[in-house]
Length: 272
Ligand code: HEC
Ligand code: HEC
Image 1 (cartoon, protein in one colour):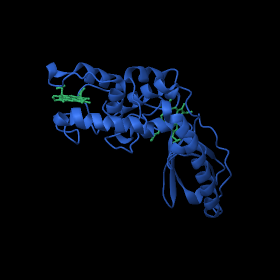
Image 2 (tube, protein in one colour; image 1 turned 90 degrees about the vertical axis):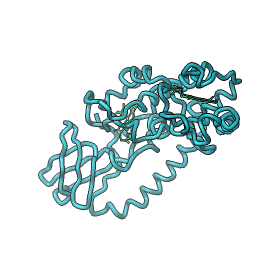
Image 3 (tube, protein in one colour; image 1 turned 135 degrees about the vertical axis):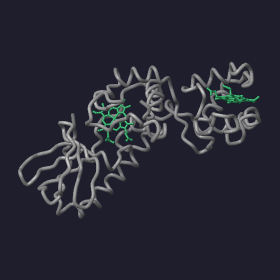
Image 4 (cartoon, helix red, strand yellow; image 1 turned 180 degrees about the horizontal axis):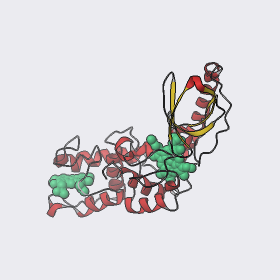
């Protein structure tokens, strides 16, 4: 289940001295992949021009009722992406162009750039410099998560699935859409320092391969490849390797499919 644990061995004694070099290499890698990412994000995110166009539409046509911060209507906060029924961008298109609540939310006959723009502005959190990730259909996203996307091969949701990758049951409550999307498109730059794959050899010559959950000065906690939680004293370890390699490849799903999976992940809020 775990892969790519073939980075330079870091013995406890030499670890400190190598960190600098590895951090520098990591930084260069990060810069390069950020450039590539910027080129590829076009299909996955709204442009800054769209966000700007949307801010004009919003001020002129929506702020009157929803307020400059998008929070004037009970139970709805447009800036934070809290709606009553809408989830996907397609739902927003429907609400805006058909209206809701017997006309209390009027229907708008907007041009494509205006409609696209106002959705971009909402998805950017009303921030002209924000990242406005496209958000698709959660039902399709769930099917992709469990099927073609192969996410469920590694991730556990609401008690189902393996424990070798992080449990995603409440991921929608703790990560932004942009970070969820980045994890799929560019796992190498989305790595969290914790969660790293580790390979450990103890003084008893036991080899443990797993995922790091926690670490302090004297101990490290890992989930091993048999999904057991292990707490180890560092003084009992001969080798302690932490991999910087991403645990997975960028997804091969299309941009619409990625949007659907993001839509699904956002519904995972730890409510069972
Ligand atoms: C005349 C007042 C009014 C204007 C103008 C208005 N809205 Fe609304 N909007 C409402 C009301 C009222 C609701 C709550 C409807 C309900 O009860 O479900 C709402 C709901 C919404 C929702 C949430 C739908 C859901 O599923 O919860 C969105 C999104 C929305 N409006 C976007 C917009 C946008 C974008 C504009 C500008 C193009 C706009 N609104 C202009 C009154 C307005
Ligand atoms: C080969 C196993 C594997 C597959 C397949 C996989 N992941 Fe992951 N994923 C991981 C591991 C391991 C981590 C944590 C380590 C890391 O950050 O690389 C992770 C991290 C994540 C995170 C971040 C968790 C956090 O705490 O922020 C998200 C979100 C995520 N994956 C979503 C997905 C989605 C969606 C798919 C399917 C498109 C997927 N993963 C496919 C192994 C996998």
